[in-house]
Length: 75
Image (cartoon, rainbow, N blue to C red; front, side, top):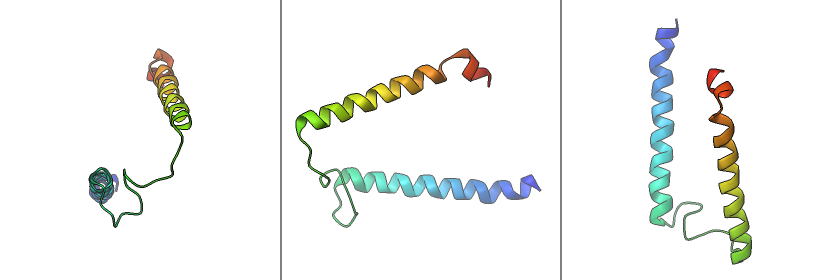
């Protein structure tokens, strides 16, 4: 039964990736008919943008440090 479901699940995953990749291209290209793109968005002061960027980098570092532990890899 699991082999029967493997192809449809794989196709759904492929379609989700393809759709998100096409959206990424449109987002970075600045296509106007998308709800948001790299040129549209909420304005922020440079200080607010820097704080958000630093927080995202710190969050990535924390997640990476946790996932790099041998105990996490073993699980």
